[in-house]
Length: 171
View 1 (cartoon, rainbow, N blue to C red):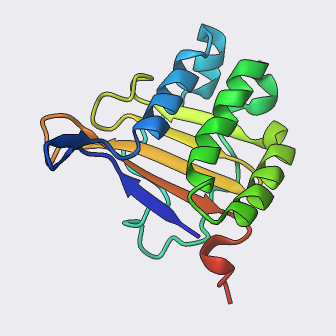
View 2: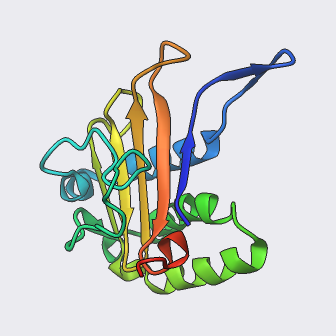
């Protein structure tokens, strides 16, 4: 069930389309809501400029890190937890309604054991800025890739599920 999506500006019939704008704005709001102590806990020790498990990470399927990094959702306030669930739901709600509801219910039950981490700027405006959500089941990464269709970095994100990734085809 991997989902990889990119954000860039698309001109179509005189309108500018910005896929993933809601996702990007939700991540920016979530990172901006962190107080200095929370931000220090959530920040990764090393810059993470590429997705660990995005579509370009060949031969790394099911290779989720053994230990989550960052700040646990149990350390977040109610508003921050709501933003974290909103970020997750923006990806999960791309699947059929009944399936999305089941998946979101599981992620909500596991929220206290879910971690938020980032590297780079919390504004997600620079190439290499990165944010991750890592839970018992959910894995979500977003990175700002180099510009290619505009002069601004563009969003590249992937949602993976640690239990049912690729329809659970581990063999």
